[in-house]
Amino acid sequence: LGNMDAEEVTRIVKAIRTEWQGDIGIHTHNNMGKALDNTLTSHALGVNWLDVTVTGMGRGAGNAQTESLLAVIDSDSTPYQPSAVYELVIRHFEQMQKDYGWGSSLLYFLGAQNDVHPTYIQNLISNKHYGTEEIVGAINYLSQLEGTTSYNGDVMESAISFDTSTKPVSGSNQLK
Image (cartoon, rainbow, N blue to C red):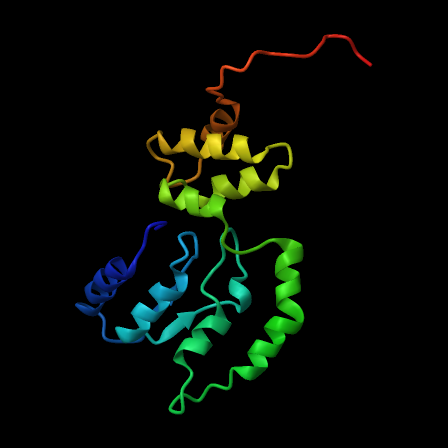
């Protein structure tokens, strides 16, 4: 769910707990910048498997960050020694994140805000033919449609060919 928040996490964990008393895990995405908050909420509710990745590495907007979770839950009573992870992040992963571009972004946030599946955003961003204006326009178009919470390639094609602008066509038919 793109708009999952602490209230929704609480509802889901409580619903699972009505029938299941064993271990529970959570894996959160950072489309709305809430991955860490949702992970911490579930942890406070007794969820004991917290699936996180270093620097939030993952598809699209990524996941909750290992190093951030460790920084929040680290105390004298926890067995964790986060300094090794911090060094790994700073020495190696932060540069890779810049080079390869994973992690949260405004475009993923806009997609989640408008209930547009992140695969649409990923495909729009990965195609270097589209500029920011075209991507934002496609997100706006997709937000008006029903059923964009799951991905459909035909809908994707309609989103990138849809243009509401009234700019005059310019140019020449002369080849150079």
